[in-house]
Length: 92
Image 1 (tube, rainbow, N blue to C red):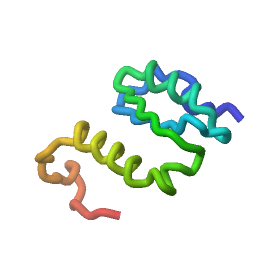
Image 2: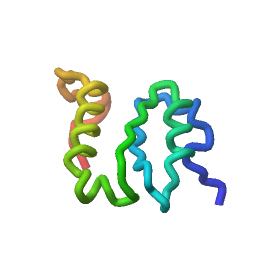
Image 3: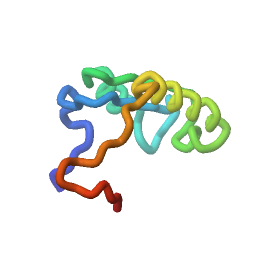
Image 4: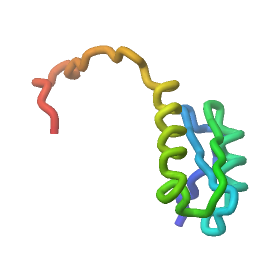
């Protein structure tokens, strides 16, 4: 009842990609676009089409946008995984 995603976008510290479809009538593009602009590390990507466009004809474009975002924000050569002190390094 009290969960409101995007209610305080200025407090989102991690990189945020918001992909909106301009003709979407299910999730209107205005509020998410505003949230992307207010987030300190927010990026807005727009594409033409309706709600399911990123999964249909626009899939390649949406995937390219998402991959480019990840490449910009993930380290190219991540540090090797080190288990936390006091653990045996086992993963769940």
